[in-house]
Image (cartoon, rainbow, N blue to C red; front, side):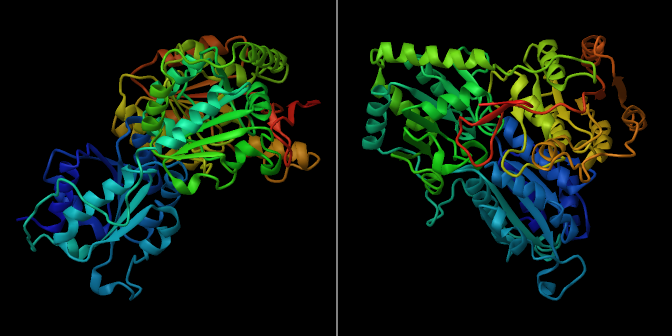
Length: 570
C-alpha cells in the first residue's frame, strides 16, 4: 500500500530512472518527501526549471534513456516549456512531471495554477492528468512507452497535489507492459519498398547518403557505416546527425545545409539518387524546396510517416525503424553487389574537386584577434577528438559543428530544431553526470552562456567539472552576420555591452577562470585549461569580432548556391 507520491517515485524506480532533474515547490512537496525517503532515484537540484528540462534532455541524448523532469505548478511548470519545445523539435524522449493545484481547485484561478496540459499541447507527443492515485503506475508506464517509442519526444504528466497526499494509500502494481490502442508505431519497413530502394541505389551513377538524428536515436550508426563502406557511398550528416558516420572517414563530406560544406551541398544538388536516413528535410537543409536536388530520386527512411513527403516528395518512401530498415537493406545487398565502378569513380573525382576548392578554409590572419575556427580546431587536437561537445546557438554553434571532428554518435549535443540559446551549460552538466570519465566541453558565446549561467552553482554542488569555452566577440555574432549581409551593416541591438568579467564570475562561484587574448599563446593556455580535470574551468577566449561563418547558402536559391567567403560566391 502506497500513497500517490510513493507510487510515483516507485514507478520511476521500476522504470530504471537513475536521475531526476528538478526544483521544489508547494504542489510537489509530497513527491519531494517521498524522494527524500528513498535512495534509488537521485534528484539534481538546478537553479532554474528550464535548466532542469535541458539537463533531462541532454541526459537522454547522451545515454539513450528517457530524461525526467520534476517541477511545481504554475511558474515552475511554465519555466520548463522552452526545454520541452527543444526536446520536441529534436525528437528527444523526456517525461515531465508537473505539479498542479489540488483537483478541486482546478479552473478556479488558484494560487500558482496553470493549465499545463493546454500550455504544452503543441510541443508534446502526449500528456496525462492524474485523476486518481491508483492510476499513477499505469500512467508512468504509458508515458515512458510513448516518449521512447516511434519518433521519440516529450510527455507531460500533470499531477494535482491531492493525488499525492501521504495519508491516502492504495495497492501498488507496476505493469510489465502497456498497450495503447491508438498508438502503434511501425518498426519493420515494407519489404517491397526496401527492395525498390536497394535497386535504385545499385543503379545510381551519382549517389549520396543524407543522414540525420534518426540514425542516432535508432542506434543505427554501425549499419549506416557498413552500408556506406560496402557501396563506397559519399555521406553527409545533418546538424543533428553529426557522429552517426565517422567524421574522419574519407567518405564523409561534412555537414550539409545552410552552413554546410561546399562539397556536401554540391554533392546533394548534383546527386541522381539520395538515400535520406532518419532526416526530415528541414528548411535549414533544403533552402528553396522548388530548387532542391532537381535530378535526384529520393529514398526516404523514417519511423514517422508524417515526416515523409512533408516538404520534399519521396519517390521511394519507407516507414520503419532506421536500424531495422538498414539491416534489411544490407541483407539484400550482400557482399558482392556493387555500383557502376566507372560512374562511381568519376563521381568521387568530382567530389574531391569540390572538396579541394573550399574544404572549410578560412582567413588565418590574426590581426583582429584569435580566429574562432582555429580555437575549435585546436580544442579537437588537444582532446584527440574524444570530448563530448555541447553548444549553444549562434556562430559558435556552427564553428563547433564544422571544425570539431565527431567520430561517434552522442558526442555532439545541441539544439537543432528550436535553436535554443542557453542549452549549452545544462547539456554539458548532464553529459558529465552521465559520462564522468569523459572530457565535456560547452562551446558557447557571451550571449548564450548568460541565459543559464546560474547553473554554475549547480555544477559546484554536484561536482561537475565541465569546461566552458566562451568564444567571446562581445556581440550576438550570428545576428550581426545577418545584419552585415542583409541589412547593410546596421547592427540593431546585436552588440553586447557591459559584459561581466567572466573569469571573476566563475571564481565567485568557486570555479577556475582563464582569459585568452593572445593568438600565439592560445593553444598553450587552452591545453593548460583542459589539463585541469577536477575543476570547472571557464575559458574566456577573445576572438575576431569580424569573422563570419562560411559557407552560407544564399536564401531562396538551390543547395549549390552559396557564399564561400565575404567576397566570393558560387
